[in-house]
Length: 307
Image (cartoon, rainbow, N blue to C red; front, side, top):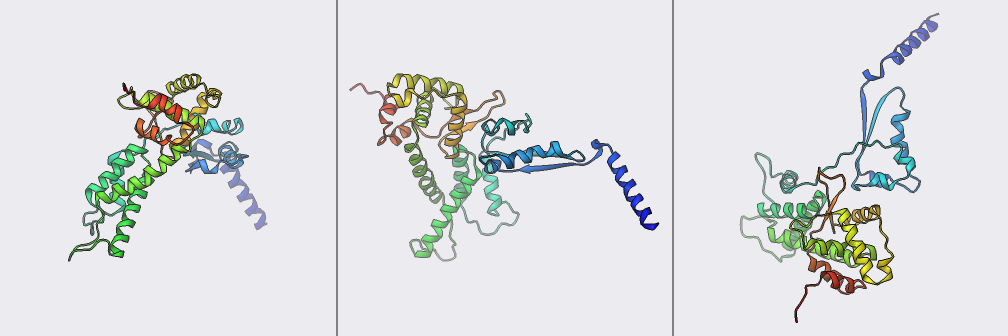
């Protein structure tokens, strides 16, 4: 009898619990960062995550995905898109002050009683400005500072630099500048020189349009129009057969953005990104100097000479 009473009590509790208004239940939020890396060929994992809230009949579940790819939903199948809501929030890249504060925080330079300063103030400022101008990716700033600090430590360990009495190793702005040049210039220039025919079209079009803009930021649709114009005038099948769509340009822009070659900028007045690059027109031309894209690059990016 006691067992029957216990079963009845448990059943009544479950019934009462099921009768509770769903709106009164607490909300559980599942946040998936770097969701780009969860996308597989069959997209099963991403589909199951976003389908989960629809199957949670007795709970309030919200799934939020964070992606570095601005048009990730459009790149996935309609099956997955049917499970993703329409609400999006575009996060702006870190600016100079944000990056500077984060770097100082990691280095313990914001405390009331900081220890020995490992980096010069100007070195931190340079790393923050360089990162903000390139991509706003804080990981680039960490990499830049880490590379500079490792080189300084190596120089003191091998005797290339000498410490004066009472002094300690210090990473100066010149160390960060050198690390920045080594890290960005060689990698980015190599990536540009290895770009595909269609990527070359995009970069050459961006360089040609950049000459007429003070801020160098171009609307993606304007770039598409320029690509079509340059491709048609090239006379070369590898460019003329491009027939790129708006989505094609966005996909290329995302790939080039991940490589640090261009930046995608989001403005509240436009639902689509604007594209810019820190590379000067002459740098883009120089990158294509020993490639099969040099003829097209010289035609649209070379400085006109009278003699």
